[in-house]
Image 1 (cartoon, one colour):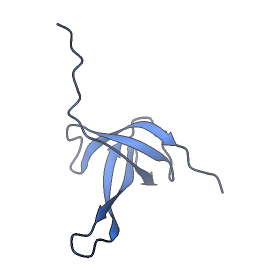
Image 2 (image 1 turned 120 degrees about the vertical axis):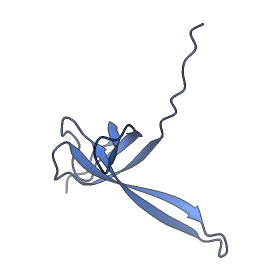
Image 3 (image 1 turned 90 degrees about the horizontal axis):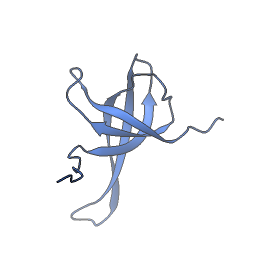
Length: 89
């Protein structure tokens, strides 16, 4: 029986806010949640450190990150693909 295994790893999409470190990018992930009392839509954000082996993602790019084993003290994510390239100003 060859069944396709579903990956249990989470994937998130966010914007690269820092690429200053070697092989690491900082990704800002924003999500919209409804306030439980006021019923207003709020934007909550989190920053994640993701492993970028080749250094191919630059500041402003929108990328997808996938959960992985701990790679360092703060790095538990790996950059998997480029969603949208940053617009040049």
